[in-house]
Image 1 (tube, rainbow, N blue to C red):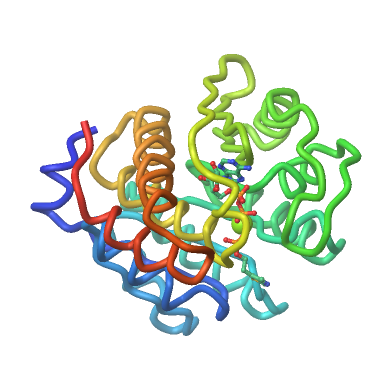
Image 2 (spheres, rainbow, N blue to C red):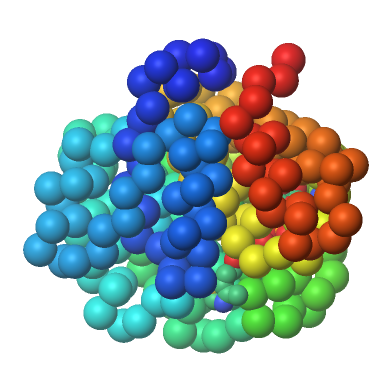
Length: 246
Ligand SMILES: Nc1ncnc2c1ncn2[C@@H]1O[C@H](COP(=O)(O)OP(=O)(O)O)[C@@H](O)[C@H]1O
Ligand SMILES: Cc1ncsc1CCOP(=O)(O)O
Ligand SMILES: [Mg+2]
């Protein structure tokens, strides 16, 4: 994954995402070197998705009518080879969300499904405690990722204390980061935006996902050393995301 190339090209990342994180995701992606656009009107999503570098479908505050919109955008992205990242926010919390994800995955060729252990466990039908959009326990992230990848026939990233990237057969883990990421909202969503931007530049999607995980969590570790708590962690994280690490 070539970060210099990404920063030169500033790939456009089309987001259909939740209202909670829009501003944070846009700022974080800008800091990293991508170009965010949030657009969710059914009449315009195909036009944007087909010219974007990547598409993020994030179900954090999804309503019934948004499912069709996400499918429309996803299929337009598929037609022009634009990678699609799906974040199944809260999939472990309600049947509606889980079924929405299952429908999207069936109708769109999703490049990667990225979520926390609780969300991905729900999609793999592995019992795990969840609390709304958060995982309440870690579970066996490797097993969860593998089972979900097999069922959805796509690459899966499980995030948490240890992150796992799996295609159902092989897997790679990464254990960087800080628990402070769990004390701000949108940490996972922003990781998804950055991962999608990397996939716009790097065609090896596993390589792109691992680069995004390492870079993001390294930036978070450095931000932690400068922060006094969750409040000051956020601006430091944005600053660190704008830097370059070897
Ligand atoms: N306890 C932890 N220690 C280190 N990094 C963590 C920890 N919890 C989460 N992270 C990191 O925070 C980011 C968001 O992960 P997570 O909190 O699982 O997502 P979400 O915000 O979607 O619930 C990931 O990069 C992950 O590696
Ligand atoms: C709190 C909340 N509620 C619905 S979406 C959302 C944001 C979730 O963000 P993340 O998954 O990055 O923690
Ligand atoms: Mg999340």
